[in-house]
Image 1: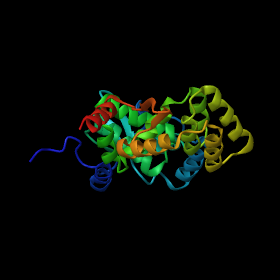
Image 2: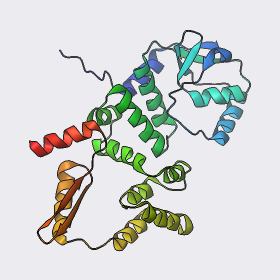
Image 3: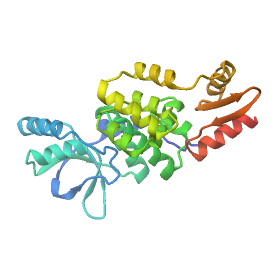
Image 4: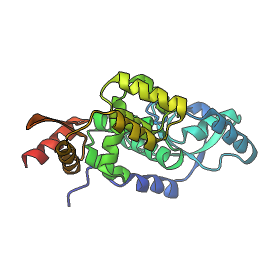
Length: 268
């Protein structure tokens, strides 16, 4: 039987580690954070609250580590590790597992997705890391994460926004829904105008969609019809410009794998 190149599902990996692993106390000065930690920002207030709980009840859930040449590196549980340091613990319960960098990153992402709610940009950045470093396709990554392929593609599209908009999204001043609407605008000048409107007026995603659509130049009904059909067939963003019986079609892709997928669909 051919072995699944992606191995077991991530949830199964994490559950297996926790259910079958045996925790032991490890000195905090032997532990270093994971340089590939998926979470970019951590809620310091939340860590402080967790530290207070740990100070009172101890660290109830072990963190997961991997061995390094010197000491250990965190696979999952960096938030708990930071809180334990804040609480003044000298040793913390941990499970040590022999995994490669790929599986360690998979576990770190899963642990965050399941328990700590990464923001949309952090999820997109880790998806991008999987694709660039480990050669995942959008389809494989979606299967691994238990989401639709379009969810992976739409998440990665966020990274195409200007950095100042990404900063607002990371800070929670814009939602992912707002960002996806802003992505539909062609110029950064237009994007800036509508972002400022959201920040100033607290415009909802639905209202922003309505305003952006109203602001856009009217499209030929045929262009709208064919755009919708192509989006459904290709599962990506499509823009059709139609003047009389001439025009152009722009089909977006977000990775080499996405381009290959589209080429196969179009060429049959």
